[in-house]
Length: 403
Image (cartoon, rainbow, N blue to C red):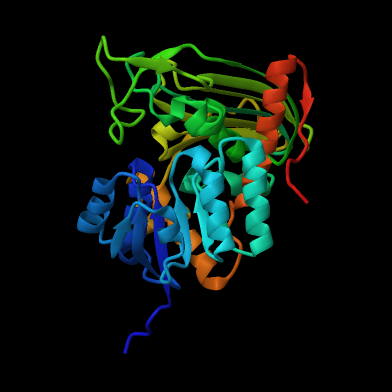
């Protein structure tokens, strides 16, 4: 007789694109991870638009839905709450979930401002619940391989880091004024939305950032207003539609110093033309370098310098240059989705890897990484960045974590 796995009841709050991605991820876990230690159960979905909740029940298999987030959080069958609502709602929802004793997974950056993130992290820490944050690019198999190469010293001493996230989702002036473009809904703009991914990945790979100097800009000042409950930041209005002001930044960039002595640069833009989803990094060391780009997420370029004692420098069969490595089942998690080499996986597969790791953390009672502590690491950098774009000076990165 097959041993029955413990169940983990899931509530999803916010059933837009990201809430649906999380829900699909939990549905896929049993089909991809037979050695899982718990069984996810989609208990309840909460969304302010009733039709979305109805879709969650009809098409995703949730047991029920509601327009009342508190009802979802306090449902007796819910063990963990996934918060995929707009950023400025994170604080109220995450703190309510933590106080109810529910484990909390929140989409990045956890809150709309650094102060909000600090209050959320403290509430969860005080409640003793397990936390997770949606920095899903950490889970790309080749990114995990890069992490191992760096940790093993294959690249030598790290000297330079270049990170960026360029996306065209806000390049069209007729792109709808979704909550992401408004401080009231998102808090800060591109620094929260996509720069957070680039800097979080850098700190995972290269350690803490100690100081920075940066700038910001808003290129598109007005956008067409969406109809209530309809449209995302990928949808388009029409000429002549009523417009509203964009109240957060389209661009943010900075130079940084890392605790290990290396230096780096970061840029992010949602209004750039050309790069469509270029979440990318290049990391350079004294013995080699590597680079990865989400647009070609199943490839990584690696350069390993010639060993100075490793042979005849005039040997024509030896040459320096980048090698392209293709993802495959020899790298972490890839084989759960497809066997062999150079058979690609996609964006939502990273969300499934993220979901199985959070599920396992809840099942075993161990803190998930990245959790709210790692969210604090980024927003501490963001707070320094905001100070810098106001002062025009280098600013130290000091933790915003509350005692």
